[in-house]
Length: 259
Image 1 (spheres, rainbow, N blue to C red):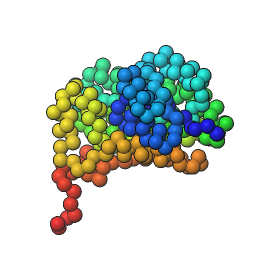
Image 2: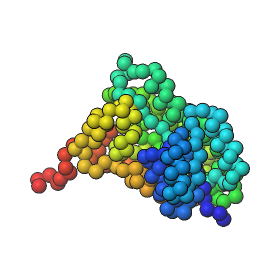
Image 3: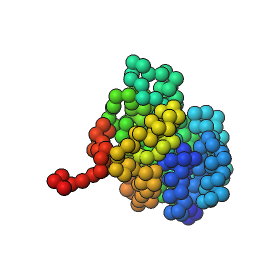
């Protein structure tokens, strides 16, 4: 059997880039997908991924990606990491433009990718035993918080897409995996959410001992994909120890009570 091949979206930065690196280190062939061609090309030169620039909010781009994939080799796994958040407005003050953007990049892009790439994953599963559809959502999909409603709604929508898809694929050798991280120190994500305010973005992590890193999440993604084909990690919720819930963060060094 040839190396397994994964399509990793959002691969130009953060969790997506870390996942592309992790899978390559484990012997996977990786098609790294994102909008920023220059970053993908640098990654291609450095670690040997195959770069493919595409805007996942444009269906024609996804259709072209699917056609190219069909012509270039099997697709054993779709790893959907691309997404994002904009704003921290209250519901009553929310920007319709920001909310539409979040729904497009988190939900509609995931649906379009499944619609176009699932036939390729089915083909690989028939030949090699199993295939994978993995979605990185967020603990924001599980618990609302003030100022997060737009992102809560978008990530909850993506999570429900994964849950329904798992039911719809029952009986096929295709795993549907959801990884839901809590606080991850990925400055670009927070910087984009806060409109480019670097000081505000970094203050999100003030006092929090060891937030998750992109590598932490990538390690769990790689474990899920490399697990035996009959083992499905339906939902992995992961947080730093300092974050007991979406809204409860310890902003001081962790210590045993009484010390």
